[in-house]
Each structure stands twice: as structure tokens, then as C-alpha cells.
Length: 273
Image (cartoon, rainbow, N blue to C red; front, side, top):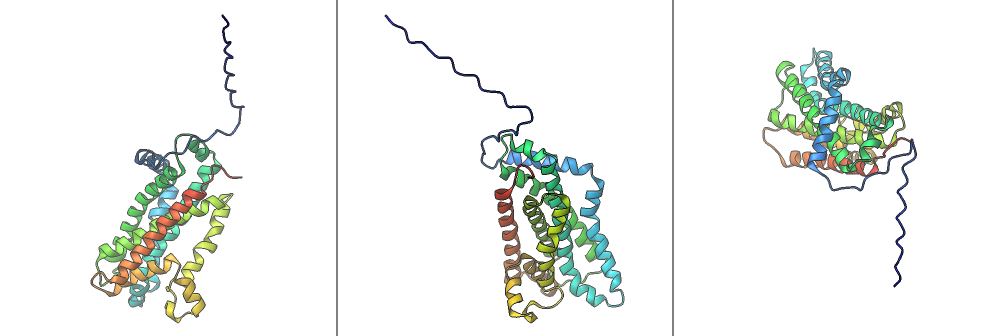
């Protein structure tokens, strides 16, 4: 009677020293992994007082500066202060988020994270949650300062003003996460600001009504999220109740933030080339 010889399985070769870790299979978005990522980011930010100061204090300092620039014309501060209350947090969150995310990638932290059972969605959602928590603090301080210490006069509810400021900060976070995928250095991340933020700043209606612009520029401004952020602030400035236009503006800003976060997850790279 013959027997069949069994060939022993070849041992799995060990990875070469210094080789790039093989990513673990992607998993569905997990609240636990997302929360763990957010906690790690907040723990790191806690040891970076300069970043915290930039996030929390700079918008407040800029609002105080603006208030006393127009000290002889408080009506001017009332007309543009609400708009800038949303623009300042958007800009600061964009800068800090893009640089912080890029630093994670260039240091190899992001590469090690994605080698674990951690999907790109978990990473992006965790970063958005961490910086979103800071955005809440930032928006609350800036709104409270503008309304109760600087005397910003608004007709609508302060809570609606805070809502738009928070959504603007979250939009800045989403844009920062997105553009960080296309930068190879922190300097390049800052260079994206003239391309991403400045056109929106010029066309959002802050300097002149959008309907008074050239028709081509007005059409471009209609698809830029900052235009709806400024429009939402102006609705709170002029109306006592929540209007249909305000609801539209809030939904557009929130939808743009969510869309950009999804694009950020899709374009997130494990390392910088």
C-alpha cells in the first residue's frame, strides 16, 4: 500500500528591514477607531501650545483689532464683523489642519497607522472629530467676544451666529485635510492658501455684493462655499427669525464640508513621495 508524501508549506519570508509595512485590509468606518484617532490627535495638540494659541486666540485677536480699526464707525464693524466671524475661523483651521496632517505623513506616523487595521475613513474622521472639538471652542470664544465684549449688533439669535461660525471652522478643517494630500512640505501646504482661500475671500461678497460683480465672477462665487457662509452670517445679521435662505446656506456649507472630507479620505496618501 502506497502513501502520499505531504510537502511541507514554505515558510512565509520575513519582511526585509526597512521595508514599507503592508497595509492591513481596509475595514468599515468604526466609531471606536475614529474616537481613538481623535484622542491621539488631541493628546498631541495638548503638548503644542503654539498651535492651540493659533487656533483659539488668533481669531479673537483679529476681531478685537478689527473692532478698533473701525472705532469711529461702529456701523461698519457691525456690517462686516459677522462675516469675518465666520471667515477667520475657516482660515485658521485650514492652515493648522493642513500643516498638522502633513506633519503626520512626513514623520511616518500616518504610514504606521494605516499599516494597522485602520482605514482611511477612520483617520480622516478622527482628525475631523479632534479639530472639530477645537473648532467648537474657537467659534464659541470668538462669537462670545464679538457679541458681548465688542458690541457686535445682530438682529437674529446668537446661537445661529455660533452655528454658522462652527460650520465655517469645520469647512476649514475639511479643506485643510483635503489639500494636505497634495503637498510635499509644510511650505507647500501654506502655498495652497492663495489658491484655495483667497479666491473665495475675494468673491464671497465681503468687499462688494455678489450681484454687483461681473456675471462670470458671480457665477463662480455661486459655487464657492465661503459665499454661502457669508450669506448665512448676513441673514442672522438682518433677520430676527430663521429664514429659508439661512437654512439653504447652512445646508450648503455643511454639505461642502462633508463632501470635502470624503474626498480627503479618498485622496489620503500613506506617505509623502
